[in-house]
Length: 83
Length: 212
Length: 220
Image 1 (tube, each protein chain N blue to C red):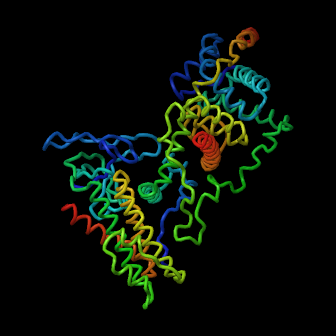
Image 2: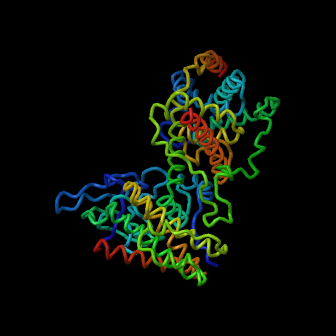
């Protein structure tokens, strides 16, 4: 058959998390890298995912300060009193 | 051992995003130790042999020295550490665009083996000397197999012209066209094994052009 | 009852567990300071209602205190606390499954969900079948204040709110809290493969939501 084995964009988007997590085997990983070198669309897709991850990371510091931790102290003291 | 490394502008690794230390005059750059950077990184230094160059195009090409345990792995050289020796100045946007054009012309050669004579499109394609010539050829009413072969040529011509129009994109277009030329060769031969042979021929062209 | 021997997972956690067992308030305050906000974020990936999530977190802390003498260190203290939360939050979510977005607890995660719409790719018959027909744009071309601005964050938050709970919980721990995959598997009781599939689907949906939001921005 004349089909040259290669990664398609459709395949790349499905293994991207494995690629970013470093769990692909070396051959698969090298195939993905070769594809990104020649595919501007996939390079953009990877860039979009990296930006998405960056934004997700920002959420951790972005929550309004409404975690009601203060109300826990009476519960703690009651627990300690029971011990 | 001596090897080659494609980097983004500013000596930045395309996947690691690590900036390799620059050589100072004739002195090699500082050793880049293998350090893990993020989960996607295997923590080793990657480079390639001349025969693998067509897989890894980027803006800058450097001659590098690798040290420690060096392994050939999936079309890459993987080592414990590496350092930049000197930039291959002959690899620039012009060389990348010239490579892309050679690929388009070779895809044309592959297509000629598919087009059944007498075929006006074959005659027209055979007379082409540049990517612009290839892009101007009209080839109506082809059988599906012929149309596919000519499609590779058209794609290759388009990428070669894009490389000239936007020099910053030339390395990517070179990579696209090595891919296209190898697919066109395999398609014409009816054999996927023709693809690596085409890659090898393209790498030879590059080695000569860059005097590696 | 004599407490079980304190495990030596990490010196920091060993000291915290010992101090908690002695009833030291400072240790509890320290622990709450570390995990209250992440616990709330994880709770809300299971139960939409804010007040219910707060209750679940409160119950979790009580369970941590009541269980600290029996904490054996098979997990780290951190993942143990989050295991307690995820078990409680799941129970709560099932009880309250009338709430629309969570009607399918773990439901739609077995079906075939492509990361990107199939229409975005060339058809298999094309010489470049499976390659982009409509390629993603280069976001680096957008101004950073637009790309990383409050509206983008709001879009991400909305997208997380629309995820099935298991996907949302993995995403929150991996990508918001920055946990390692192994820790997430431990806290949520997932195999590494399932963890990755859930994360992949969650990330893909958030990216897609951002892509349509930013495309509207460019078009506007």
